[in-house]
Length: 485
Ligand SMILES: Cc1ncc(COP(=O)(O)O)c(C=O)c1O
Image (cartoon, rainbow, N blue to C red; front, side, top):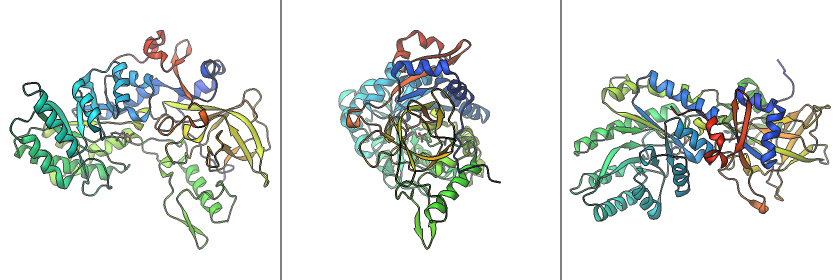
């Protein structure tokens, strides 16, 4: 059944939908910095924490959750994580500062990723848990702690393991083949390092990969015990997925139409030679597109539940949750994108629209592509148009959105977006679900244009309250935040 031109309808939480429909609320948010602006919804973050907690509690898993701060730099979201009672995973001195400013105690902070000497020393001084990325780092910690705190408390570390069998290759972590060297360091006389457990983080959305990695870590726990160590933690990293689409069938139909267009059999939906990772051969498109994750319909909570229920062949096919409980082990997780899923949108203003020689409308916006896309990804959800005054009127238009930089590649969408009419200067274009990496993973002050600022939106009984992101740490607004739990 045809439902109009190809479209990529976005999932929108009720709170965000209500805010965008509230003219006063939106005007209040724009009053701070105008457009472009990132809007942050801490209550959505809080809901995401609750959803993951519900799964872990139901499965009776002992756990600790750490919000992976790299997903978003927002101070308000870090504060919300602290108030929700979870920990925080930081991967740079800047993120560590931000966590401290949000009030996290050192025991609630885990430092992950490759560090270098300066950051390692800061982590040691701060007393946070260190998730060790490589043997050089472990040797450095070993040397520093032996020299500088021979009688002091041991430093708590996790060992991140890489090159796990049956998982995608990663440049991070201590290769499994070399892990015995790490155990030798930790078990050697006079060590001031305490091994909490083993960690992994996989750049894959597949539950099966995590099951295999967890199984390997269980084996490593046994191996470490045989060396006289006493690890009790398996840290599964992040990677729990987001749901962007409101309609998976329409997403699939758009992708089919895009492929037909690339093969020359339908309306061209791709901008100037873009193929999105497909290759075209003998009149057909082949390969995997770069944007497949935007069609995902499995929630992070369901993915976590599937992982905990997965049967482990090497443990009498008992589910992972049971194996953890039977062995008195704790599960640690570091969700980033799953916690900020739907906790932010980005609002741009239309500058003007121009028509190309073939009649294609190009809608120019006051932001650049890197403010709404994570690295080189194409975001496959339709932006929403919020007209400044009268609703858009026909005829319908299949447009591309262009960014404000003088670079050919600064196209905000490289795929065609069908709208009921042409937007006018001053209309607002809202990019849904941009909090996870889209907002500030690759944003830069190119051409001396500053990246969009952040404004925090909280729904209250008296309507919506807005404040700047920095303001929430000190402001009166902080009282409106989700309560501590
Ligand atoms: C070590 C580690 N943990 C957690 C995360 C968060 O991952 P995600 O946002 O996919 O949950 C990352 C992301 O790069 C990571 O490197």
